[in-house]
Image 1 (cartoon, rainbow, N blue to C red):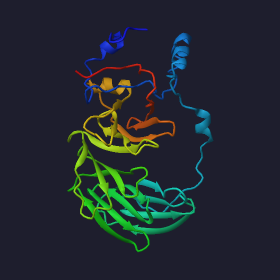
Image 2: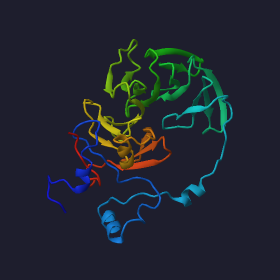
Image 3: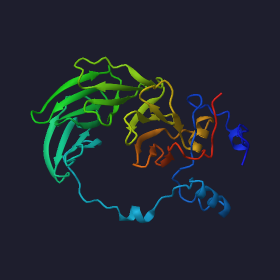
Image 4: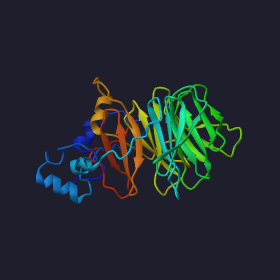
Amino acid sequence: HRAPGRPSAMAASTEALALPEASTRLSSHYEVRAGLDSALPLASRLLLREAGRTRRRPCPDLVGRLKCTRSLREHTGCVHALAWSPSPGGDMLLSGSDDLQMKVWSNCASRFHASHHTGHTHTIFSVGVVPSSPSQAVSCAADGEVRVHDLEKGAAQVFADFAGAMVFRLEWRPSTEAVFLSTHDDGKVRLLDLRVSAPSVPAIVDLGQRTATTNVAFKPGCGNHFAVGADPDPFVRLYDLRNCREPLHCYAPRHLCAQRSSAAPRSGGASGVDWSQDNLLAASYRNGDIYIFDTHDYAPQPLLSTTAT
């Protein structure tokens, strides 16, 4: 146990790492990698377990039980977007593709229902059913447009146009019927509201032109906290919607941060983020690995902790 305020050798050796913002936490103690636990001495493993910091490892038994139960074959291009209709119900599935079509599947994706031409001119990256109206959907694409669709009439209209700044992801704010976030290749996260007919959409997060915001997910049970994935930046940032000037925390795998501060080839940032119901944050990286971070307020200090200077 070290005295408060006195940096450990591990922390001191990483003070040169350029964290994205000041006073943020760098956490890497939930990396999902085979063999990490077995490489540690028994005493160290017990200490990590009692501190609540046991590393996760892949479960081959679980992976072995997974199997393909159904293939949905209607698109003629790569499928980048899938979204279930909200609960209760939740038995309708939307899909979006390079073919610029939105497909509707019913009965828990057991039956193809309809195909809609979206009007997009480039790859569809995200789709979603409007929570307050299951007959309406939204989509976003590489053409920089967010479109609203009437699934009953087959009509579509442009809701917002970001002048060619690709829109990667749409995420509904919990407990709201018309408010959602969007991520973009210009490094911004924007807040949109379908109730506003001619929206002026300022950025609530801006990471700069060199960093794309790839994905966003709200924390379960909290309509204000959301996580943002970025690329090629390895950090997953946690923000509070009430004040987005600085993130609450940043999370990243240690070895990707080391690549960021060296001349080593970079393997890319987080292409996807999502939460579990017990507030574990999962991030999938372009190098093919998935990492899990503990975001509980009572979580112990991470193995690697530093403050930007």
